[in-house]
Amino acid sequence: MGQDGRASDCGTGRMTHQRTWQPNEERLVVMDRLGSRRNPAGMGEDYYPYGEERYGLAGDDREKFATYWRDGFTGFDYARQRYYVPRSGRFLTPDPYRASAALTNPQTWNRYAYVAGDPVNFVDPWGLFLAAPEEVEGGPGPMQMIVPLSWFAGGGGGGGYGPGEPPPGYGPAGGGNARVVRPRSILRERLRDFADTNCGKLFAETLNIDLTRYVAGQNTPLYDLRNPNYGDTLVRDIVGDGGSDANRSLRDVVGTGDAAVVHGSRGAAILLGPEFYGVNLQRLDTDEWQQHKRRRGSILLHELLHVYDRALTDQYILAKWAAHMFAGGTAPKWGGTRWISIWIDNDCKPIDASRPGVFW
Image (cartoon, rainbow, N blue to C red):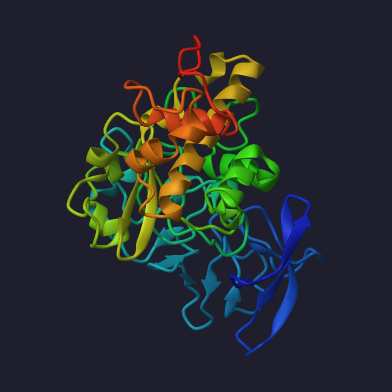
């Protein structure tokens, strides 16, 4: 499916219009949850776990396994950054990021490996990062994201943390009742009816800001800094030069905070620190879990303000919007930038900073 393809849900996968190699030609096809093209009649397009076709009856030069375009001459799958060989279940070239191996996870030591040996639960649409299908922007089909977000602490290329070693409090996709913070899903949920909220109306009518344009199709990269491979990466390597943080590492920018935004010549990216996710999520009751997710959404909306306009720094917001944010009209001398997320969590209604429990 092309980036402008049309899709609708179809069981556990989806039905979509997919381009062929013929100019301006599209066909209606069924794709499963991994983004693999399927034949509804059950013939011609079925795959073994690593992408080799069971029957070999369908033609090549089209998207087939896990969003990859299969080359008819070589039989290799085009994975954007490198080629994948379905017969061997390995990439043709090693992960280009040399530090992709995590010492605590032997699955990452093989830089040719595909999705840490778990092709049933994960995909690697760009040949660089392991990701759960539902966490990739756009779902099955061509992935619209720039960098897929994985909640696993590890992760380069075909490696990455496998489902055996998730961080404390997190489980793999489809893990029953396991609670997993999925930032893109939370953000989409918060933006879905944002225009009708007090925040949406205040932003649009008073502050002339329309965050709703980021609904679903926004492709601002999200970086999960629990992934040890990201920590030492420089800002300029992900967004280009031109920003004040260009020569700083992602870990240094986030520090001990929840999240941060970096800008460069290639755009902006949102960095999510370990504090964003929290710990011991399985111990939260239902109400506490819903509150936790809502607060993560408020933090993401806060960061989207910085993506929306580079001039909207935390200092500017606290100084210029204080009349909208606080019952007394001025920002407290304590609490710092967390007040912005708390204000958004309060649907942008003035908050009483002296009220017990208001600060989280």
